[in-house]
Image (cartoon, rainbow, N blue to C red; front, side, top):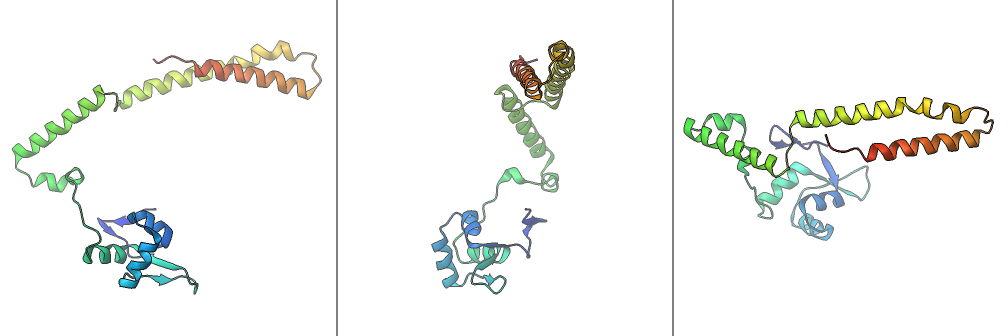
Length: 171
């Protein structure tokens, strides 16, 4: 559920007390206290359950000092970066590049090419092992009339195949 549009909370998103309390990190009893102090809410379907308009509640919480807005410089947009002087933009780009290189060295980041190669390797192995199943079990199934025996043989072969695949080494 996307509750933010163009950097602002949508007006039409309503949540009940439990999800809202979890969202802002307070107890449901604290929400009740906020309501007594004037936090906006509505009743849904003529029931006694309260529903909270997220945008209005966050605005109320901020205006009443229960929540503060924190700005994270990592969330700058490209437009914000274009306003920076060229040297600062270059320094920021260099810092981000160094962070990416460090993350890659620490194995916290891998390239799309590495993922593609690994997936290709795994899928090729899966294809080859799976295509080998019929020739592996064809002679074992000759003359068997019991569905339960055929099922048991197929299960055994499939479990062996899956065990082999699970032991695949890294590329």
